[in-house]
Length: 168
Image (cartoon, rainbow, N blue to C red; front, side, top):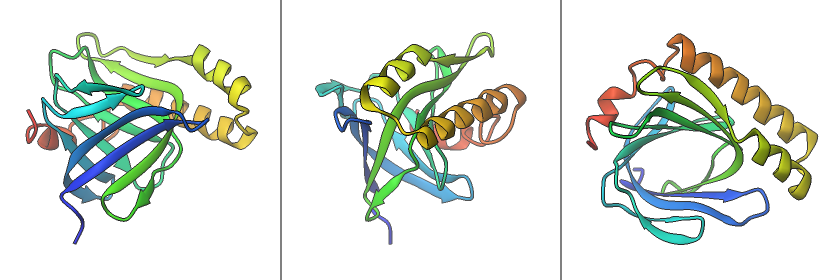
């Protein structure tokens, strides 16, 4: 039986801390594992203690180079996807991800889909020595997500709403 609580650990490619927080396992389906993070959750962001002010749901796909954060208002991003290495699970209660800088975001007010942090990706690619296969996977994932967030592909259309309702 999987644990109800999951520790989500994001690091940068060089191993430095990025994000670390507990989440409640909501469900698992063909899309991945759905995790809920309620308002008030204590977290670590860039190595510093933080508290989540707005709840969200995180989808950790079974085998993909991204994670997706689904947000309620007043957050301006309805969907925020981090390009990452595929999830590495340490038992059922800890998931490790390497954040590869690129983000694909859909804005709530306009539906505009944006690719963010290309400059950070280029900088870290050089500094940390991202291998060519990692670069190719990251760029391909960003391209696929850019299309999926814009055209209504699930889970980015409505599938996430039932899970988000559980943490709002």
